[in-house]
Image 1 (cartoon, rainbow, N blue to C red):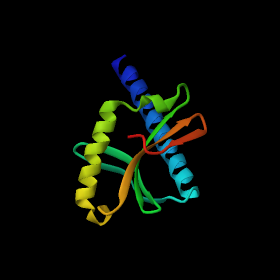
Image 2: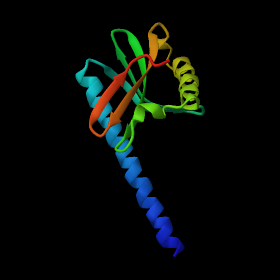
Image 3: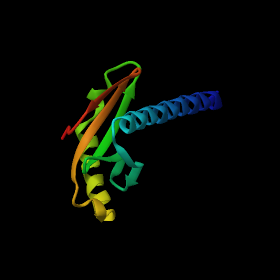
Image 4: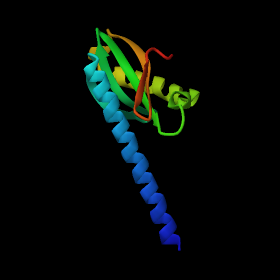
Length: 123
């Protein structure tokens, strides 16, 4: 009985992971079509992760991707997650000093079903 429950949780986790990756791919495609140059994805450090880092017109964009089939995902960016993103930005800029002269902003891409809502400069 325990194995069946564990397997069910594993399958649910895998589905969630795949949904998240598909959403990030949709976000990357949206950005590329709109003139952004993707620098990296899923940048991680000890403070957190940034889903997409891109540039457009000499502005460095740190982009969080939220997605859902059942709710308005733009409301699920918490203050704590935003705090982690900000700390991670400082680590990124320390490691990649070529971008220190760029202005930067934090953006959100909310994907609800297949509708993409790009919200610039949320901070």
